[in-house]
Length: 129
Image (cartoon, rainbow, N blue to C red; front, side, top):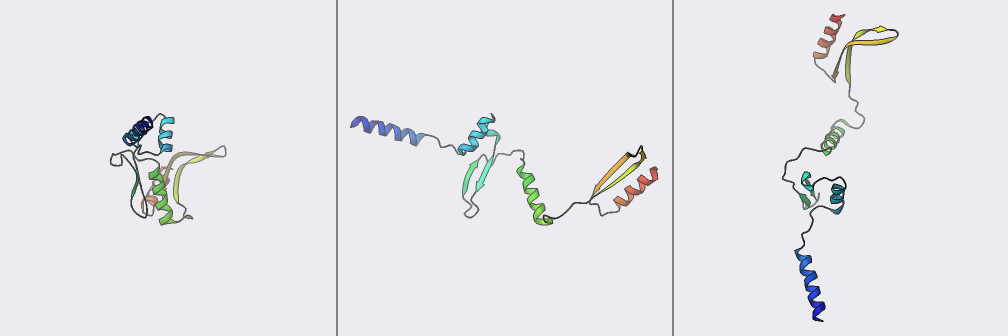
């Protein structure tokens, strides 16, 4: 009986002393598969309702932003502009048609420009002809 109690005590004390990995097993596995050090990653996950920190891994360490920033920008654009918004880009080109194809000597693209800049660029391109 003493042997069983001693084994139980050793097992429980080593379990209590074991460090709990703050990264979920799936994240740790993905890092290992790609041979990426965990120190190259920062994660902060909060419960939306309570604000409780669910995962906090190096969240105070500055990192280069990942593609999640692009997702955030897209989300804001969809919210502000709507899903049916189409971006207008004015294209001005100088050139001539040779053998049925347009050969441009200069091209200027002005995305959604409502200023006099577009008219000015168009005028300068016409002057080059």
